Amino acid sequence: MEKARQSLSEESERLMMVSGEAVDASGKAAQALSRHSESLFKASQDASNFVNELNSKQIRKQREVFLSAAKFIVESLHSLSVDLTRAIDGEISEKTWKAFQKGDVSAFTRKLAQMGDQLPLEKAREKFTGDGEFRTYVQRYIRQFEELFDQAAENDHGALLSSTFASSEVGKLYQFLCSVAGKEPRLGKDVAKAA
Image (cartoon, rainbow, N blue to C red; front, side, top):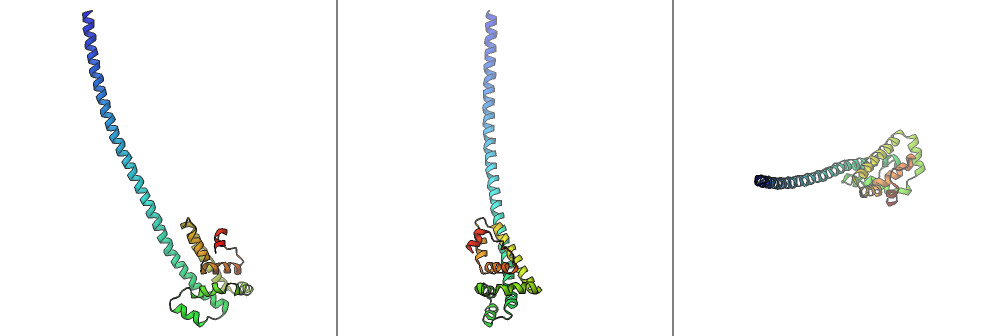
């Protein structure tokens, strides 16, 4: 009995020692896991911040590209307005021509947009049907404005750019030329109301 008690006591001490070692090992493992979890969490935050920064830079770059392209298209629309003024009126007023030569590239667009209702729609429609050169100018203007408008809508979530282009002189002239060509303007209903 004494021998069994002695053996049981030794086995109990050995179990206590092994369980203590197991507790120490699990504590060390828990600490290591905690350190690794913190490292993973920090890496995850860093990656998230990096992705957000990249997205922000991409949006900024897209806007820069759009604005550069928009400037080119608007200049082209103003240039087409010179040809359209010639084709509609037959001659160009000296005042408008001088303003254009002094750097006011929107002088002809403004003149046509201001004439608005005074422009003879039926005469312009007849000219559109019968004059291939005039038809080319009208179709090119419409196509370029729609490209600009579509790009603005794509890059502008608040519709501010779209509304601005639609209500500008180039937008008003676009709407008139759509009437001349018998085409429905591609402006959204909300944007067309704002224009």
